[in-house]
Structures are given as C-alpha cells and as structure tokens.
Length: 362
Length: 222
Image 1: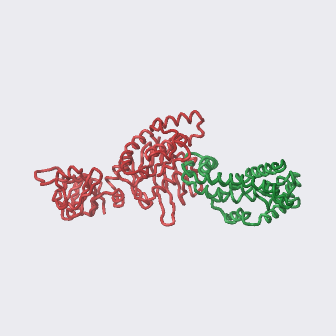
Image 2: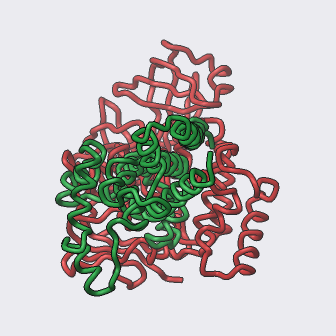
C-alpha cells in the first residue's frame, strides 16, 4: 500500500482563508496527525478531503486518482471517494441501532456479507452487547467506537478523524487515548487525525503535519516535528515551553556554544548552517532536570542556577516556572517537587543535556 | 345518518386520502427544495404555495375551474388528447382538496426537514449513499414526526374543504358531493338534523387527525 495524498488548494471564508500549499502525505497505513491551534484550518482540510466542502481553487489527488480539480471543474462526489469519516461529535444516526449504524455503508455488500462484517466489527470493538441499542443511550467512548466501526466498515482507503476526543470529558480522553491508538494500529488503514492537543498528537501519530492560519508549516515524523521544529512558528504551534533568543559564539564539530542572558550554553546541532549568528533556543519542559545543592561533577553540559517562580499542578505532574535570567519551564512529578522542597523562591539548578537544546536560526 | 349520508362521509374520506397521495410526495419534494437548496425564485414559489391558504377558497376554485375546464389551458389539453374530463367529477374534488391542503403540509414539512442536522446527511454521503438514499434513510426518518403531523393536518383540512370544491366539482349527489357541501345543502333545505349529524362526524374525524398530529409533535424523544 503506497497510497499518497497530495493536495494544493485554497478555500476562502468571509474572514479567513485556508491555503494548503502542496501538501504531500505518504500514508502507507500510518497515522498522520494534523496538528494546529483552533481555527488553523484542520477541519476544513478534512472536510475538503471528504468532499463535504469544495475548495475554491486547487486540486486534491489520492493514490493517483483525482478527487478535485478546480481548473478542470472536476469533483468526485463524496460517496465515490473511499473515505471513512469520523466527525468531532460522531454524528451517529439517532434513529438507527448500533448495528444499523455500522452496517449503513454496506448496502451493496449483500445481506450475508453485511451481517458478517457487522458481526466482525462488533466483536472487534467489544460492542456485541450494545448491538440493538440506540446511540442516544451510549457513553461518549462507546459512541466513538461505533463511529469508528461505521467508518471502517467499508474498508476505506483513507480514514479521517476530526478531534476524536473533542466530545469527551478529560478523564475519558486519557483512558481512551491508548485504546484508540491500539485500534488504529489494528485497523491498518491510512489515517489523518486532526487534533490541537499535543499529548494526543504524540500518543496517536506516526507522522505530523503542523498547520497554522491555514498553512502547512512542517511535516515529518511526529517526534521530530515536536522536538525539532524548523521554525519559530512551528515551535510555538507545538507549544515548546521555553523559546529564548540566543547568540552563537562558536560552532565546532556539531557542538554549538551559545550565550543567552549571561549564561554560556552548549547545544548539539550538526544541522545548523555555518555562519549562523543568532538563534532561538528551544527547551521542552520535560527535558529540564532540577538538582539542589549541586556539588560534584555531572554529565549534562548546561547547568543554570535559577529561582522557582510558580508551581501549578498538571495531572500527576507539576509545572514549574523558573527564572534563570530568562524564563524557563520545567515539568516534574509531584513526588520530585515534594522531595526537593520546591516552592516559590527556592533556589535550584536546572540541567539540560546538550542534545536537548534545539536551535532554530533567527 | 341515512345511507346517503354514510356514502357522503365515505366518499369524502376517500377523496381526502387520495389527495394525500398527491400532496405528500409533491409537498415533500417542494419542502425539500425549499429547505435544502438555494435557487432563484424560491421566494416566489414559496408565496405561490402559501397563496391558497389566504385567498378566498372560492377564488382558488374559480381559477381551477378556468384552468381545468374543457376550454381551459390544462383541461383543454387533457380533453383533446386523452378524452379526460376533470371539472364536475370526483377528479376535480381530489384536485381541489389537494391544492387547498398542500400549503398546510408544506408549511409543516419544511421546518421538519430543516431541523434535520445536515451533519447526518453528510455522514451518509461519506458512507457511499446517493442523494435518494440519503433522503429516504436519513432525512425523512429524522423528520418523520413533523411530516406525519403535517400530513394529518392537511388531511383534516381536506375533509372540511368547501369553497374550492363547490366551484370545480359542484354538488352532484352521489358523484361529487362532499361533507361540507352536503351540510350546506341540508341547511339550505331547512333540514338541520342531518346537517348536525354530518357536522358531528366531520368534527370527530378532524379532531382525531389533529390530535394525533399534536401528540406526534409533542413526543419529541430519541
């Protein structure tokens, strides 16, 4: 399966426009996360791919088949595109049972084949006991599974998921994330998944496309995009906590010496173009290690004395705002915070390994 | 009630039901076009559909009479090519009832269709459904309460129709006489008792139809 999705189009709205500029996504049974803030055009992209909205200009091709071409006035109707679509609120048919919903797309399959496929999906998703229920009586997580089964029933060539957890409360999201990840792995269907949540993106995606203000900013393996953004825009979009301007002092065999707010820092950045003088320093909060009364030698190249400004709980973790001449964010377990007696005003040392300092030329 | 009155009652119900066979499909198509499509002249068509509701029924009847008569635009064609006569037959009754009942049906069916969330229709398209299937398996079932209530209201209206019917179908005993026409006729002859009997039957039928419709609209669950 080497289906690839290529699109280049503009869709105008009264107040904004979504411009997808030569997006090419090799899909090969991978989950590609479409990531970006609300209003970045993620849902519009999905709806245009499904044929529920038409671009004003441009084209969409999937696996060599033209789905839309404004120049040739050609649009393949939604029903002829082999897509499975799961909208944010699932849109389960309220008048059909769970089995009826799942079987809706299998009209041409013939009675026996349809019954077999529905039974297979019900069993796979553990929905057997719910087969005769109406969607109104299901929990959010159950509705999500029914919607997924319905979308996959016809074995679509492309699965489109729009904010799959948008309709769920926070505790359910965390619980169902792993479940959806497993289901998508088993489904082995190329998937485009829209989300504005970084945890979701990292948990569910193989690849990521970052979208902002209707434009594609970066595309690549999800960890690379989230840890090594190519531009300030992407760094902000993927919510890297600390972004700090810095000066390059020396570049030596991939090791870069920098100065920022009076500190000298070392970063590993073999891909930094030679001659770069000014950069943005990107540090993810979970890469910051805090030590107290740091004596003895340690391997991390960067050790910054700092003062704790604020602490705020973030699930089982604690999010810290530190001041080391520039604001620095750190993410620790609550346990670690208690052990280190971390409270506003406390003095600590922050350690960051050289490979975890990511640089973006300014 | 005499045997004759029972014949009139039965005939009226049959005519009203027949008119529903015309009104429901045509009205659904019209309501769907008004609810789901944007087109030029929509407001004009909408007005035309509503007109019989506000014009004097006798005037609607007069227009139908001139249109469907042997010298009329439509009636002439039908008579010449098919040898079909409409005016002063049961066919005229059905047409008069249909024209008078259509506005009520469309005015109930249109909001019912409009209330169906288009997301469900789009979902059906992504599952391979064509427009017909979308309408029959998604839009219509989700709008069914409003549509049925509208049909019952239109049916009740058809049962009591007088003005347009008397113009195009007149009062031919045993052939075109409907409930309202018969009641009017009895009162003209000074026979109040059979008039009241028929009126009672008409009221009971209309009451049932409207009540069923109201109940359907009220039980808005699932």
